[in-house]
Length: 119
Image 1 (cartoon, rainbow, N blue to C red):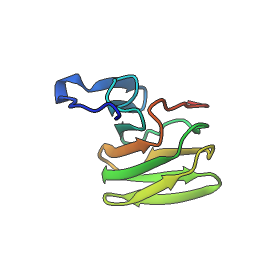
Image 2: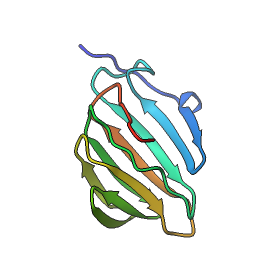
Image 3: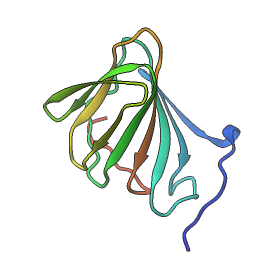
Image 4: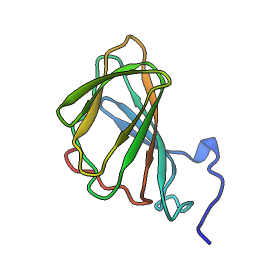
């Protein structure tokens, strides 16, 4: 049986970024999953995270609020609240906030130990 457990709001792991922040609720490093990573990404207006890819996992990104242009390989995809994208392992991608408010997205990865190249 795998690990599980509650992550209280005050125990979320926050990683400030120049463009916004990443917040981690579930991962192998946190100790509450053997199979996935779950987090929240916030990108401030006019900012973007750097193009990157994940060699060891797929990613699912769901927009909670805000408006982004999401690069998926060579394609630009406009996304807003309620939109969800599936990003295969090894695919270069990034999100640019094109709105006037912070863009907030839930992100899920198919591994407890997400790797990032290019970030």
